[in-house]
Image 1 (cartoon, rainbow, N blue to C red):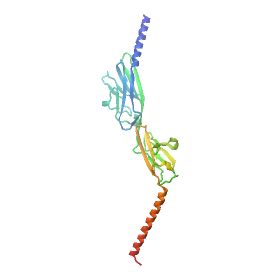
Image 2: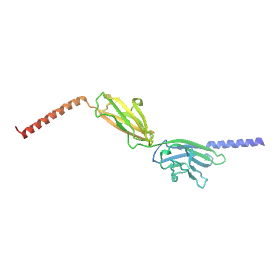
Image 3: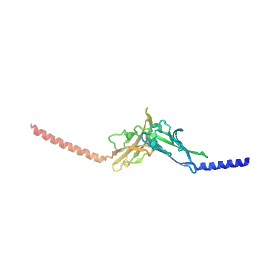
Image 4: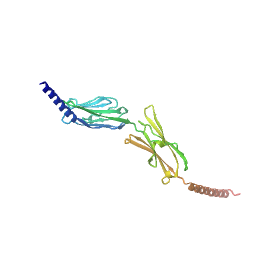
Amino acid sequence: MPKLSALLLVAVCAIGLAWARTVRVTELVVPPAAIVGESVILRCSYDLGNEELYVVKWYKDDIEFYRYEPKDDNQFIYFPQPGIDIDLSRTNSNIVFLRTVALDSAGNYKCQVSTDAPTYSCVQAVKEMNVIILPIEGPQITGGQSTYELGDNVTLNCTSAESKPAAKLQWFINDQSVPDEATDDHGVFVKKDRLQISSKSLNLKLSKRLFRRGKLSLKCEASFYDSVATISKEITLLEINSASTYCCHYILMFISIILTFFSTIRYLETFPS
């Protein structure tokens, strides 16, 4: 009899483990970056196999903030915490609707799914969500001169507007990205309100090959988590042909002489000697 009991126990455990393997989180959707003030949908899809759902729990940084328990009288339970503002009317067993994202909303989000007797299986998945504050304007390009000549050195600085985190800056010459090693990164400045500013300089020598149809386009782009937002500021330098400048100089001088001549004639007619 003891041997039979042991065999039965092993069989029950084997069956329980086989059932447990069928329970899994098939998909956890948590945006890698969310924008302050916007709403966010967290989605947890799961496959229970042959088992019955007992409870779905959501955690932020290992602190539970939402629970769905289908057999309980109060199926939905919300545990308030900083950064978590749930719209319960749009939340269910698979979805948590965060109404307004705040800086405190950033963290690791975990969906935990547990099944009922006899196996009481428990599976979970975790993903991180960052929260960003977008700038209210594009980056500023400073340091340029009003005029340049071929052979001159151009030094321009690109400074991002306030954001969190700091924008990733990228310089472009005629829509071609400039390698980071060819620029000077001045790092990130953090303000008291936790907003951040980044800065990067571009140095280049003006040559004829840089111009396209007489124009040189220099652009600085500020990006945030690649797909969230990209804003840019562009300036254009015009190539001035030295021969044309020389010719225009003499044309202007000739016009000035003619105007002076006619002014003298009028003066003599008005005030004859």
